[in-house]
Length: 503
Picture: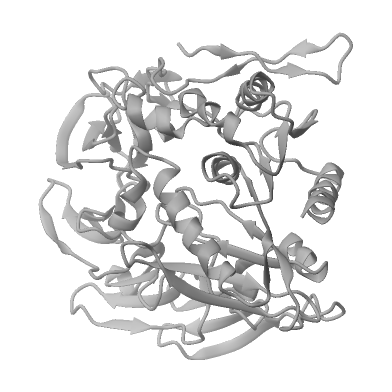
């Protein structure tokens, strides 16, 4: 039911069409079905999920007795969710347990999590109070109580201990920059923090529910792994990583916060050049993503910076990153600040970062560049075109140029449809700003990109030509949304050289 999008494989002679099913914002979305296949009868029963047929069937889960299937149905507008239960043997709808609505959007990501030994009780993730928390429900739809609460988010459920009476989970309760592991007595409400070292802890619970394997790091400490009991006492040290950059010139990494225009804290990471001299002035590479579901800055090893950022610091660049409004783990108000106007609020926050950089005596304010991929490519190109003169150089990889050409579910969640929000789409379309370009801009794109289809960059190129603007452009044949393998090394060499030559 979805349009065939014309991608081409150029590695064959002649080239081979490799069309991709790609529903764009406002276009036709497939009418999905859920089938239950019976291994004994070799027949399929389809669940009677009802009308309208064009809806999202998400978070499909089995009941513990395997007699029922739960589905979180989300409407096309993504502002209304129904948690339904269906009979696996007949496909008939048994009940709607509850509904959730939002003035902006709703985004269920996990199905019901049943309490061990209690087939009639389950946990449900919801952001209904503004933060992602757990709620305890009965299978008749009755809400028993909210399990976790506060201006922080539950970011993972490890499992249950003590025959299901104790919950083991990960959260940002200490800080949005950290993740820690907690236990919670579901009967008494008593909570215990198992992980004490500052940083980001990712853990797994063993089968008997007695121990966790804690994998953690922080700004100064490379990866550590250890076994803890459920009182937080270390039982065994498994592994302590050495500093993988010990043979390279060290770089100073800082994680701190700035204020957005509305007073909201924005978390930042700044990497100073190797052999930093405060009396000198250095060029800056700002690395940006800025979109939903991606946090670039935290208290993990080296502040979550990747090796390319450290490489650029060793080449004499200050490397800066800021997580703007719209990124995760800060609650709904922070995440939904960008609703219906992608790019606008994010740019305001990124410019707060630039303002901070301009105040630093070691920054060469005439030599600030920006680099990002995907949503970060959209942000990079937006900053170069909508805020001309702020950045001398930009490198944008796989950029979204016009949200009307991006996929249906993601785009409509944050922007509504082009028909519902024409002003928002028009303001965000970078095709409208090509005449404003100042400085040097390099666009990179995978030629077989099925995520941000190459048409984005092609239409942008045409607009630059129409406006007499010269940019640099490079395609990666055979690559999808990300450039992988040995070609990735060539790509980073190209990006670093671009900044070194033009910044």
